[in-house]
Amino acid sequence: MTDVEKRHATPATLEWEYAPAPEARDIVSFQQRYGLFVGGEHVEPRTGEWFASISPATEEPLAEVALAGAEDVDLAVGAARDAYENGWSGLRASERAKYLFRIARILQERSRELAVAESLDGGKPIKESRDVDLPLAAAHFFYYAGWADKLEYAFPNRGPQPLGVAGQIIPWNFPLLMLAWKIAPALAAGNTVVLKPAETTPLTALLFTDVCRQAELPPGVVNIVTGDGSTGAHLVKHAGVDKIAFTGSTEVGKAIQRELAGTGTRLTLELGGKAANIVFDDCALDQAVEGIVNGIYFNQGHVCCAGSRLLVQESIAETFVGKLKRRLTTLRVGDPLDKNTDVGAINSKAQLEKIRELVASGKEEGAEIYQPPCVLPEKGYWFAPTVFTNVAQSYRIAQEEIFGPVLSVLTFRTPEEALEKANNTAYGLSAGVWTEKGSRILWMAERLRAGVVWANTYNRFDPASPFGGYKESGFGREGGRHGLEPYLRFE
Ligand code: NAI
Ligand code: MG
Image 1 (cartoon, protein in one colour):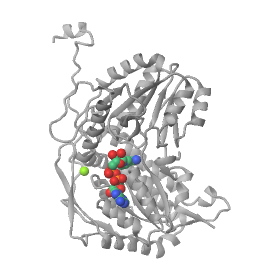
Image 2 (image 1 turned 60 degrees about the vertical axis):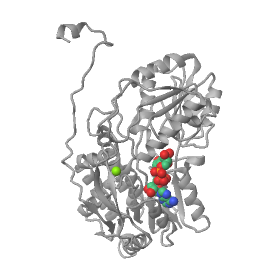
Image 3 (image 1 turned 45 degrees about the vertical axis):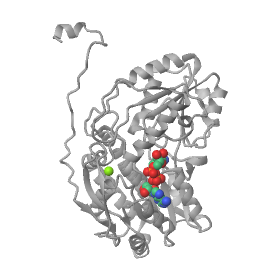
Image 4 (image 1 turned 180 degrees about the vertical axis):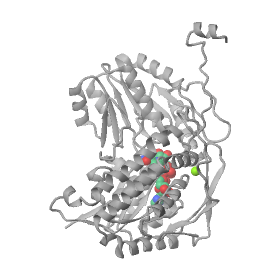
Protein backbone atom coordinates (compact mmCIF):
# COMPACT_ATOMS: atom_id res chain seq x y z
CA MET A 1 0.00 0.00 0.00
CA THR A 2 1.39 3.42 -0.93
CA ASP A 3 1.32 6.29 1.54
CA VAL A 4 -1.51 7.98 -0.36
CA GLU A 5 -3.53 4.79 -0.39
CA LYS A 6 -2.90 4.36 3.32
CA ARG A 7 -4.20 7.83 4.09
CA HIS A 8 -7.46 7.05 2.29
CA ALA A 9 -7.84 3.53 3.53
CA THR A 10 -10.66 2.75 5.95
CA PRO A 11 -9.61 1.20 9.27
CA ALA A 12 -10.82 -2.18 8.05
CA THR A 13 -8.44 -2.26 5.12
CA LEU A 14 -5.54 -0.71 6.95
CA GLU A 15 -3.18 -3.23 8.50
CA TRP A 16 -1.34 -1.86 11.49
CA GLU A 17 1.92 -3.72 11.55
CA TYR A 18 3.86 -3.67 14.78
CA ALA A 19 7.61 -3.98 14.53
CA PRO A 20 8.94 -6.57 16.97
CA ALA A 21 9.89 -4.95 20.28
CA PRO A 22 11.70 -7.68 22.16
CA GLU A 23 13.05 -7.10 25.65
CA ALA A 24 16.67 -8.27 25.82
CA ARG A 25 16.86 -11.54 27.70
CA ASP A 26 20.60 -11.50 28.33
CA ILE A 27 20.04 -9.40 31.44
CA VAL A 28 19.19 -12.69 33.16
CA SER A 29 21.57 -15.56 33.42
CA PHE A 30 20.19 -18.64 35.04
CA GLN A 31 22.51 -21.17 36.62
CA GLN A 32 22.33 -24.62 35.15
CA ARG A 33 21.15 -25.95 38.52
CA TYR A 34 19.76 -24.48 41.71
CA GLY A 35 19.95 -26.25 45.04
CA LEU A 36 17.67 -25.52 48.00
CA PHE A 37 18.18 -22.34 50.00
CA VAL A 38 18.56 -23.48 53.60
CA GLY A 39 20.21 -21.51 56.39
CA GLY A 40 21.58 -19.00 53.91
CA GLU A 41 23.34 -21.66 51.81
CA HIS A 42 22.47 -23.34 48.56
CA VAL A 43 22.44 -27.05 49.30
CA GLU A 44 21.88 -30.19 47.27
CA PRO A 45 18.63 -32.03 47.99
CA ARG A 46 18.90 -35.13 50.17
CA THR A 47 16.55 -36.79 47.72
CA GLY A 48 19.18 -36.47 44.97
CA GLU A 49 16.29 -35.54 42.66
CA TRP A 50 16.07 -32.60 40.28
CA PHE A 51 13.57 -31.36 37.73
CA ALA A 52 13.61 -28.79 34.94
CA SER A 53 11.71 -25.52 34.79
CA ILE A 54 10.87 -24.65 31.21
CA SER A 55 9.74 -21.58 29.36
CA PRO A 56 6.10 -22.28 28.47
CA ALA A 57 6.41 -20.02 25.40
CA THR A 58 9.13 -22.15 23.80
CA GLU A 59 9.25 -25.36 25.86
CA GLU A 60 12.98 -24.67 26.28
CA PRO A 61 14.45 -25.86 29.62
CA LEU A 62 15.77 -22.87 31.59
CA ALA A 63 17.37 -24.49 34.62
CA GLU A 64 17.24 -27.54 36.86
CA VAL A 65 15.91 -27.17 40.35
CA ALA A 66 15.98 -29.44 43.37
CA LEU A 67 13.03 -31.59 44.33
CA ALA A 68 12.91 -31.37 48.11
CA GLY A 69 11.72 -34.34 50.16
CA ALA A 70 10.75 -34.76 53.81
CA GLU A 71 14.34 -34.62 55.06
CA ASP A 72 15.06 -31.43 53.09
CA VAL A 73 11.93 -29.78 54.41
CA ASP A 74 12.94 -30.81 57.92
CA LEU A 75 16.37 -29.19 57.49
CA ALA A 76 14.77 -25.98 56.18
CA VAL A 77 12.30 -25.82 59.05
CA GLY A 78 15.20 -26.46 61.46
CA ALA A 79 17.18 -23.60 59.91
CA ALA A 80 14.18 -21.29 60.18
CA ARG A 81 13.65 -22.26 63.83
CA ASP A 82 17.29 -21.69 64.62
CA ALA A 83 17.27 -18.26 62.96
CA TYR A 84 14.06 -17.37 64.80
CA GLU A 85 15.34 -18.35 68.23
CA ASN A 86 18.91 -17.21 67.90
CA GLY A 87 18.61 -13.74 66.49
CA TRP A 88 15.60 -12.73 64.46
CA SER A 89 12.95 -12.75 67.19
CA GLY A 90 15.25 -10.81 69.53
CA LEU A 91 16.24 -8.24 66.95
CA ARG A 92 15.10 -4.66 67.42
CA ALA A 93 12.04 -4.10 65.25
CA SER A 94 13.67 -1.18 63.46
CA GLU A 95 16.46 -3.58 62.44
CA ARG A 96 13.92 -5.93 60.89
CA ALA A 97 12.49 -2.96 59.04
CA LYS A 98 15.96 -2.15 57.74
CA TYR A 99 16.26 -5.52 56.01
CA LEU A 100 12.80 -5.22 54.49
CA PHE A 101 13.58 -1.75 53.16
CA ARG A 102 16.80 -3.12 51.67
CA ILE A 103 14.97 -5.97 49.97
CA ALA A 104 12.43 -3.53 48.54
CA ARG A 105 15.16 -1.32 47.13
CA ILE A 106 17.10 -4.23 45.64
CA LEU A 107 13.91 -5.50 43.99
CA GLN A 108 13.55 -2.10 42.38
CA GLU A 109 17.17 -2.01 41.31
CA ARG A 110 17.00 -5.48 39.82
CA SER A 111 13.46 -5.15 38.50
CA ARG A 112 14.32 -5.50 34.81
CA GLU A 113 16.27 -8.68 35.39
CA LEU A 114 13.55 -10.14 37.59
CA ALA A 115 10.78 -9.12 35.19
CA VAL A 116 12.50 -10.86 32.30
CA ALA A 117 13.08 -13.95 34.45
CA GLU A 118 9.41 -13.95 35.47
CA SER A 119 8.22 -13.72 31.87
CA LEU A 120 10.63 -16.43 30.71
CA ASP A 121 9.76 -18.91 33.43
CA GLY A 122 6.02 -18.34 33.59
CA GLY A 123 5.01 -17.03 30.13
CA LYS A 124 3.43 -13.74 31.21
CA PRO A 125 3.85 -10.66 28.99
CA ILE A 126 6.87 -8.56 29.86
CA LYS A 127 4.77 -5.42 30.11
CA GLU A 128 2.83 -7.04 32.94
CA SER A 129 5.84 -8.40 34.84
CA ARG A 130 7.60 -5.07 34.32
CA ASP A 131 4.68 -2.78 35.19
CA VAL A 132 2.67 -4.86 37.64
CA ASP A 133 4.45 -7.81 39.26
CA LEU A 134 7.76 -6.13 40.03
CA PRO A 135 6.55 -2.71 41.19
CA LEU A 136 3.90 -4.34 43.39
CA ALA A 137 6.36 -6.84 44.86
CA ALA A 138 8.73 -4.02 45.82
CA ALA A 139 5.81 -1.94 47.13
CA HIS A 140 4.78 -4.81 49.37
CA PHE A 141 8.19 -4.96 51.02
CA PHE A 142 8.24 -1.16 51.41
CA TYR A 143 4.79 -1.20 52.95
CA TYR A 144 5.48 -3.94 55.51
CA ALA A 145 8.91 -2.50 56.27
CA GLY A 146 6.98 0.50 57.55
CA TRP A 147 4.89 -1.62 59.93
CA ALA A 148 7.77 -3.69 61.36
CA ASP A 149 8.52 -1.27 64.20
CA LYS A 150 4.93 -0.08 64.62
CA LEU A 151 3.12 -3.29 65.50
CA GLU A 152 2.10 -1.82 68.85
CA TYR A 153 0.33 0.96 66.95
CA ALA A 154 -1.25 -1.43 64.47
CA PHE A 155 -2.69 -3.48 67.34
CA PRO A 156 -2.85 -1.18 70.37
CA ASN A 157 -3.03 -2.83 73.80
CA ARG A 158 -3.00 -6.32 72.35
CA GLY A 159 0.70 -7.15 72.77
CA PRO A 160 1.45 -8.50 69.28
CA GLN A 161 4.05 -11.30 69.22
CA PRO A 162 5.45 -13.32 66.30
CA LEU A 163 4.34 -16.92 65.88
CA GLY A 164 7.68 -18.51 65.01
CA VAL A 165 8.21 -20.38 61.76
CA ALA A 166 5.81 -19.82 58.86
CA GLY A 167 5.46 -22.38 56.05
CA GLN A 168 4.33 -20.69 52.86
CA ILE A 169 3.17 -22.33 49.66
CA ILE A 170 2.60 -20.26 46.55
CA PRO A 171 1.22 -20.78 43.02
CA TRP A 172 2.59 -20.09 39.56
CA ASN A 173 0.47 -17.17 38.36
CA PHE A 174 2.33 -14.33 40.16
CA PRO A 175 5.44 -16.08 41.46
CA LEU A 176 7.48 -13.19 42.79
CA LEU A 177 4.48 -11.11 43.80
CA MET A 178 3.01 -14.00 45.81
CA LEU A 179 6.42 -14.47 47.40
CA ALA A 180 6.31 -10.81 48.45
CA TRP A 181 2.74 -11.13 49.76
CA LYS A 182 3.90 -14.03 51.91
CA ILE A 183 7.40 -13.10 53.04
CA ALA A 184 7.03 -9.34 53.68
CA PRO A 185 4.30 -9.47 56.38
CA ALA A 186 5.76 -12.63 57.97
CA LEU A 187 9.18 -11.02 58.44
CA ALA A 188 7.75 -7.67 59.46
CA ALA A 189 5.85 -9.45 62.24
CA GLY A 190 9.08 -11.11 63.41
CA ASN A 191 8.71 -14.64 62.02
CA THR A 192 11.08 -16.67 59.89
CA VAL A 193 9.87 -18.55 56.82
CA VAL A 194 10.16 -21.64 54.67
CA LEU A 195 8.65 -20.90 51.28
CA LYS A 196 7.79 -23.36 48.55
CA PRO A 197 7.37 -21.90 45.06
CA ALA A 198 5.25 -23.64 42.42
CA GLU A 199 6.92 -26.33 40.33
CA THR A 200 6.53 -24.53 36.98
CA THR A 201 7.82 -21.15 38.19
CA PRO A 202 10.54 -21.56 40.82
CA LEU A 203 13.21 -19.38 39.21
CA THR A 204 12.41 -15.90 40.50
CA ALA A 205 12.20 -17.27 44.06
CA LEU A 206 15.66 -18.71 43.51
CA LEU A 207 16.93 -15.37 42.20
CA PHE A 208 15.34 -13.84 45.30
CA THR A 209 17.79 -15.85 47.42
CA ASP A 210 20.47 -13.64 45.90
CA VAL A 211 18.44 -10.57 46.86
CA CYS A 212 18.42 -11.86 50.46
CA ARG A 213 22.18 -12.33 50.32
CA GLN A 214 22.67 -8.81 48.91
CA ALA A 215 20.47 -7.40 51.68
CA GLU A 216 22.63 -9.30 54.20
CA LEU A 217 19.51 -10.86 55.67
CA PRO A 218 20.64 -13.16 58.50
CA PRO A 219 20.91 -16.80 57.33
CA GLY A 220 17.83 -18.94 57.92
CA VAL A 221 15.32 -16.08 58.10
CA VAL A 222 14.18 -16.95 54.58
CA ASN A 223 14.49 -20.52 53.32
CA ILE A 224 13.34 -21.65 49.89
CA VAL A 225 12.49 -25.27 49.18
CA THR A 226 11.59 -26.10 45.59
CA GLY A 227 9.56 -29.13 44.65
CA ASP A 228 6.07 -30.28 43.78
CA GLY A 229 2.88 -30.94 45.70
CA SER A 230 4.59 -33.64 47.77
CA THR A 231 7.12 -31.06 48.99
CA GLY A 232 4.28 -28.75 49.93
CA ALA A 233 2.57 -31.59 51.77
CA HIS A 234 5.74 -32.28 53.81
CA LEU A 235 5.84 -28.64 54.82
CA VAL A 236 2.18 -28.70 55.86
CA LYS A 237 2.68 -31.86 57.94
CA HIS A 238 5.85 -30.67 59.67
CA ALA A 239 5.26 -30.34 63.40
CA GLY A 240 7.83 -27.54 63.69
CA VAL A 241 5.79 -25.13 61.59
CA ASP A 242 3.60 -22.68 63.52
CA LYS A 243 1.63 -21.30 60.63
CA ILE A 244 0.78 -22.29 57.08
CA ALA A 245 -0.13 -19.74 54.42
CA PHE A 246 -1.33 -21.25 51.17
CA THR A 247 -2.36 -19.75 47.85
CA GLY A 248 -3.54 -22.14 45.14
CA SER A 249 -6.41 -24.39 44.18
CA THR A 250 -9.48 -24.88 46.35
CA GLU A 251 -8.98 -28.64 46.19
CA VAL A 252 -5.48 -28.51 47.71
CA GLY A 253 -6.64 -25.83 50.16
CA LYS A 254 -9.32 -28.18 51.45
CA ALA A 255 -6.80 -31.02 51.80
CA ILE A 256 -4.51 -28.74 53.82
CA GLN A 257 -7.34 -27.64 56.06
CA ARG A 258 -8.25 -31.28 56.72
CA GLU A 259 -4.62 -32.10 57.49
CA LEU A 260 -4.25 -29.25 59.97
CA ALA A 261 -7.61 -29.55 61.70
CA GLY A 262 -7.04 -29.92 65.43
CA THR A 263 -3.26 -29.43 65.30
CA GLY A 264 -3.24 -25.82 66.47
CA THR A 265 -1.18 -24.77 63.44
CA ARG A 266 -2.47 -21.43 62.23
CA LEU A 267 -3.78 -21.38 58.67
CA THR A 268 -4.76 -18.93 55.96
CA LEU A 269 -6.02 -20.00 52.55
CA GLU A 270 -6.27 -17.88 49.42
CA LEU A 271 -8.00 -20.05 46.86
CA GLY A 272 -9.85 -19.81 43.59
CA GLY A 273 -12.60 -17.58 42.30
CA LYS A 274 -15.30 -17.15 39.69
CA ALA A 275 -15.84 -13.44 39.88
CA ALA A 276 -18.75 -11.61 38.30
CA ASN A 277 -17.98 -8.39 36.48
CA ILE A 278 -21.38 -6.67 36.40
CA VAL A 279 -22.13 -4.11 33.69
CA PHE A 280 -25.21 -1.87 34.06
CA ASP A 281 -26.72 -0.03 31.11
CA ASP A 282 -25.86 3.41 32.50
CA CYS A 283 -22.09 2.85 32.67
CA ALA A 284 -19.41 4.27 30.39
CA LEU A 285 -19.46 1.42 27.90
CA ASP A 286 -16.02 1.76 26.35
CA GLN A 287 -14.38 2.15 29.73
CA ALA A 288 -16.23 -0.95 30.90
CA VAL A 289 -15.02 -2.90 27.85
CA GLU A 290 -11.44 -2.09 28.86
CA GLY A 291 -12.20 -3.21 32.40
CA ILE A 292 -13.71 -6.49 31.24
CA VAL A 293 -10.69 -7.15 29.00
CA ASN A 294 -8.31 -6.35 31.85
CA GLY A 295 -10.42 -8.48 34.17
CA ILE A 296 -10.18 -11.70 32.19
CA TYR A 297 -7.28 -11.49 29.71
CA PHE A 298 -4.70 -9.97 32.07
CA ASN A 299 -2.07 -12.64 32.77
CA GLN A 300 -3.88 -15.05 30.37
CA GLY A 301 -6.71 -15.24 32.90
CA HIS A 302 -4.41 -17.02 35.37
CA VAL A 303 -5.76 -14.80 38.11
CA CYS A 304 -7.66 -15.97 41.17
CA CYS A 305 -9.74 -12.77 41.16
CA ALA A 306 -10.23 -12.76 37.35
CA GLY A 307 -13.58 -11.38 36.19
CA SER A 308 -14.42 -14.64 34.46
CA ARG A 309 -18.20 -14.10 34.38
CA LEU A 310 -19.49 -11.04 32.60
CA LEU A 311 -23.00 -10.15 33.75
CA VAL A 312 -24.32 -7.57 31.34
CA GLN A 313 -27.69 -5.83 31.48
CA GLU A 314 -29.93 -7.25 28.78
CA SER A 315 -30.79 -3.86 27.25
CA ILE A 316 -27.18 -3.26 26.21
CA ALA A 317 -25.97 -6.85 25.88
CA GLU A 318 -25.80 -6.94 22.11
CA THR A 319 -24.02 -3.59 21.77
CA PHE A 320 -21.67 -4.35 24.59
CA VAL A 321 -20.68 -7.82 23.43
CA GLY A 322 -20.16 -6.38 19.92
CA LYS A 323 -17.75 -3.81 21.31
CA LEU A 324 -16.01 -6.44 23.36
CA LYS A 325 -15.51 -8.76 20.39
CA ARG A 326 -14.14 -5.90 18.32
CA ARG A 327 -11.68 -5.07 21.11
CA LEU A 328 -10.55 -8.69 21.24
CA THR A 329 -9.39 -8.53 17.63
CA THR A 330 -6.77 -5.98 18.72
CA LEU A 331 -5.26 -8.14 21.47
CA ARG A 332 -1.80 -9.34 20.53
CA VAL A 333 -1.07 -12.93 21.55
CA GLY A 334 2.50 -14.22 21.43
CA ASP A 335 6.07 -13.85 22.61
CA PRO A 336 5.97 -12.86 26.30
CA LEU A 337 9.22 -10.94 25.91
CA ASP A 338 7.78 -8.68 23.19
CA LYS A 339 6.76 -5.38 24.75
CA ASN A 340 3.67 -5.21 22.53
CA THR A 341 2.29 -8.55 23.68
CA ASP A 342 -1.03 -8.43 25.54
CA VAL A 343 -1.61 -12.15 26.06
CA GLY A 344 1.36 -14.43 26.66
CA ALA A 345 1.77 -18.19 26.98
CA ILE A 346 -0.37 -20.51 29.08
CA ASN A 347 1.72 -21.44 32.10
CA SER A 348 1.92 -25.20 31.55
CA LYS A 349 0.76 -28.06 29.41
CA ALA A 350 -1.44 -29.29 32.23
CA GLN A 351 -3.14 -25.89 32.55
CA LEU A 352 -3.65 -25.73 28.77
CA GLU A 353 -5.33 -29.12 28.86
CA LYS A 354 -7.59 -27.99 31.68
CA ILE A 355 -8.62 -24.90 29.69
CA ARG A 356 -9.25 -26.96 26.55
CA GLU A 357 -11.34 -29.44 28.46
CA LEU A 358 -13.54 -26.76 30.02
CA VAL A 359 -13.91 -24.91 26.72
CA ALA A 360 -14.98 -28.16 25.05
CA SER A 361 -17.59 -28.63 27.79
CA GLY A 362 -18.89 -25.10 27.11
CA LYS A 363 -19.44 -25.90 23.45
CA GLU A 364 -21.01 -29.21 24.27
CA GLU A 365 -23.41 -27.74 26.81
CA GLY A 366 -24.64 -25.29 24.19
CA ALA A 367 -22.79 -22.00 24.62
CA GLU A 368 -21.69 -20.03 21.59
CA ILE A 369 -17.96 -19.49 21.26
CA TYR A 370 -16.10 -16.51 19.79
CA GLN A 371 -12.36 -16.25 19.28
CA PRO A 372 -10.77 -13.42 17.29
CA PRO A 373 -8.64 -14.48 14.35
CA CYS A 374 -5.11 -14.89 15.63
CA VAL A 375 -2.14 -17.03 14.73
CA LEU A 376 -0.77 -18.92 17.70
CA PRO A 377 2.92 -19.86 17.78
CA GLU A 378 3.62 -23.50 16.99
CA LYS A 379 5.86 -24.28 19.92
CA GLY A 380 4.79 -23.68 23.47
CA TYR A 381 1.37 -23.51 25.14
CA TRP A 382 -1.15 -21.02 23.81
CA PHE A 383 -4.83 -20.31 23.95
CA ALA A 384 -6.68 -17.61 22.01
CA PRO A 385 -8.77 -15.08 23.95
CA THR A 386 -12.25 -16.58 24.12
CA VAL A 387 -15.77 -15.33 24.80
CA PHE A 388 -18.76 -17.56 25.38
CA THR A 389 -22.27 -16.17 24.94
CA ASN A 390 -25.59 -17.95 25.53
CA VAL A 391 -24.25 -19.27 28.79
CA ALA A 392 -26.63 -20.72 31.37
CA GLN A 393 -25.74 -20.55 35.03
CA SER A 394 -25.65 -24.32 35.25
CA TYR A 395 -22.91 -24.71 32.63
CA ARG A 396 -19.50 -25.76 33.90
CA ILE A 397 -17.95 -22.67 32.24
CA ALA A 398 -20.19 -20.53 34.48
CA GLN A 399 -19.44 -22.53 37.62
CA GLU A 400 -15.84 -23.73 37.52
CA GLU A 401 -12.64 -21.75 37.63
CA ILE A 402 -11.08 -22.05 34.16
CA PHE A 403 -7.97 -20.04 35.03
CA GLY A 404 -7.46 -19.16 31.38
CA PRO A 405 -8.38 -16.39 28.90
CA VAL A 406 -12.01 -17.47 28.72
CA LEU A 407 -14.98 -15.25 29.52
CA SER A 408 -18.55 -16.47 30.06
CA VAL A 409 -21.27 -13.92 29.31
CA LEU A 410 -24.60 -13.99 31.10
CA THR A 411 -27.32 -11.34 31.10
CA PHE A 412 -29.66 -9.82 33.69
CA ARG A 413 -32.53 -7.35 33.79
CA THR A 414 -32.62 -5.90 37.31
CA PRO A 415 -30.01 -5.18 39.98
CA GLU A 416 -31.61 -7.88 42.15
CA GLU A 417 -31.16 -10.44 39.41
CA ALA A 418 -27.54 -9.36 38.84
CA LEU A 419 -26.87 -9.77 42.53
CA GLU A 420 -28.45 -13.17 42.71
CA LYS A 421 -26.52 -14.45 39.72
CA ALA A 422 -23.25 -12.91 40.90
CA ASN A 423 -23.60 -14.60 44.29
CA ASN A 424 -24.63 -17.91 42.74
CA THR A 425 -21.17 -19.41 43.07
CA ALA A 426 -19.23 -21.50 45.54
CA TYR A 427 -16.52 -18.87 45.46
CA GLY A 428 -16.36 -15.35 46.88
CA LEU A 429 -13.10 -13.62 46.14
CA SER A 430 -13.89 -10.57 44.04
CA ALA A 431 -16.46 -8.77 41.90
CA GLY A 432 -16.71 -5.73 39.66
CA VAL A 433 -19.56 -3.24 39.27
CA TRP A 434 -19.85 -0.84 36.34
CA THR A 435 -22.44 1.89 36.72
CA GLU A 436 -22.68 5.64 36.80
CA LYS A 437 -24.68 5.62 40.04
CA GLY A 438 -22.78 5.77 43.29
CA SER A 439 -25.83 4.63 45.24
CA ARG A 440 -26.06 1.51 43.11
CA ILE A 441 -22.37 0.76 43.64
CA LEU A 442 -22.88 0.92 47.40
CA TRP A 443 -26.07 -1.14 47.24
CA MET A 444 -24.30 -3.84 45.25
CA ALA A 445 -21.05 -3.77 47.23
CA GLU A 446 -22.94 -4.30 50.45
CA ARG A 447 -24.68 -7.39 49.10
CA LEU A 448 -22.03 -9.04 46.95
CA ARG A 449 -20.48 -11.96 48.81
CA ALA A 450 -16.94 -11.20 47.71
CA GLY A 451 -13.82 -10.13 49.57
CA VAL A 452 -13.05 -7.33 47.13
CA VAL A 453 -15.54 -5.33 45.07
CA TRP A 454 -14.10 -3.02 42.44
CA ALA A 455 -16.26 -0.18 41.12
CA ASN A 456 -15.71 1.16 37.61
CA THR A 457 -12.29 -0.46 37.60
CA TYR A 458 -10.84 -3.92 37.99
CA ASN A 459 -7.70 -5.71 39.21
CA ARG A 460 -6.52 -2.76 41.29
CA PHE A 461 -3.95 -3.71 43.89
CA ASP A 462 -2.31 -1.79 46.64
CA PRO A 463 -0.26 -3.21 49.50
CA ALA A 464 -2.29 -1.15 51.97
CA SER A 465 -5.53 -2.80 50.91
CA PRO A 466 -6.58 -6.18 52.35
CA PHE A 467 -7.34 -9.00 49.92
CA GLY A 468 -8.98 -12.37 50.52
CA GLY A 469 -12.09 -14.45 50.11
CA TYR A 470 -15.36 -15.77 51.41
CA LYS A 471 -16.70 -19.31 51.04
CA GLU A 472 -14.55 -21.62 48.89
CA SER A 473 -12.19 -18.76 48.06
CA GLY A 474 -10.61 -19.22 51.47
CA PHE A 475 -10.10 -17.21 54.63
CA GLY A 476 -7.61 -14.76 56.07
CA ARG A 477 -6.51 -11.48 54.52
CA GLU A 478 -3.28 -10.48 52.83
CA GLY A 479 -2.22 -6.88 52.45
CA GLY A 480 -2.83 -3.97 54.75
CA ARG A 481 -2.79 -4.07 58.52
CA HIS A 482 -5.09 -7.08 58.24
CA GLY A 483 -2.28 -8.97 56.50
CA LEU A 484 -0.09 -8.79 59.60
CA GLU A 485 -2.64 -10.41 61.86
CA PRO A 486 -2.24 -14.01 60.61
CA TYR A 487 1.46 -13.80 61.51
CA LEU A 488 0.92 -12.61 65.07
CA ARG A 489 -0.43 -13.89 68.34
CA PHE A 490 -1.82 -11.56 70.95
CA GLU A 491 -1.26 -11.55 74.68
P1 NAI B 1 -2.16 -26.32 43.16
O1 NAI B 1 -3.08 -25.86 44.23
O2 NAI B 1 -1.92 -27.79 43.02
O3 NAI B 1 -0.72 -25.64 43.37
C1 NAI B 1 -0.45 -24.51 44.13
C2 NAI B 1 0.76 -24.77 45.02
O4 NAI B 1 0.45 -25.79 45.97
C3 NAI B 1 2.00 -25.28 44.28
O5 NAI B 1 3.14 -24.73 44.89
C4 NAI B 1 1.94 -26.77 44.51
O6 NAI B 1 3.18 -27.41 44.42
C5 NAI B 1 1.40 -26.84 45.92
N1 NAI B 1 0.72 -28.08 46.27
C6 NAI B 1 0.09 -28.97 45.44
N2 NAI B 1 -0.43 -29.99 46.15
C7 NAI B 1 -0.13 -29.75 47.45
C8 NAI B 1 -0.41 -30.45 48.67
N3 NAI B 1 -1.10 -31.58 48.69
N4 NAI B 1 0.04 -29.91 49.83
C9 NAI B 1 0.72 -28.75 49.83
N5 NAI B 1 1.02 -28.06 48.71
C10 NAI B 1 0.60 -28.56 47.54
O7 NAI B 1 -2.67 -25.73 41.80
P2 NAI B 1 -2.36 -26.26 40.31
O8 NAI B 1 -2.50 -27.74 40.25
O9 NAI B 1 -1.08 -25.68 39.86
O10 NAI B 1 -3.53 -25.60 39.48
C11 NAI B 1 -4.81 -26.22 39.42
C12 NAI B 1 -5.90 -25.21 39.42
O11 NAI B 1 -5.91 -24.51 40.65
C13 NAI B 1 -5.78 -24.12 38.38
O12 NAI B 1 -6.28 -24.54 37.16
C14 NAI B 1 -6.58 -23.02 39.01
O13 NAI B 1 -7.93 -23.19 38.72
C15 NAI B 1 -6.34 -23.19 40.47
N6 NAI B 1 -5.30 -22.27 40.97
C16 NAI B 1 -5.68 -21.16 41.64
C17 NAI B 1 -4.73 -20.26 42.08
C18 NAI B 1 -5.12 -19.02 42.79
O14 NAI B 1 -4.33 -18.10 42.89
N7 NAI B 1 -6.30 -18.96 43.34
C19 NAI B 1 -3.31 -20.45 41.82
C20 NAI B 1 -3.00 -21.68 41.15
C21 NAI B 1 -3.98 -22.53 40.73
MG1 MG C 1 8.82 -22.52 34.09
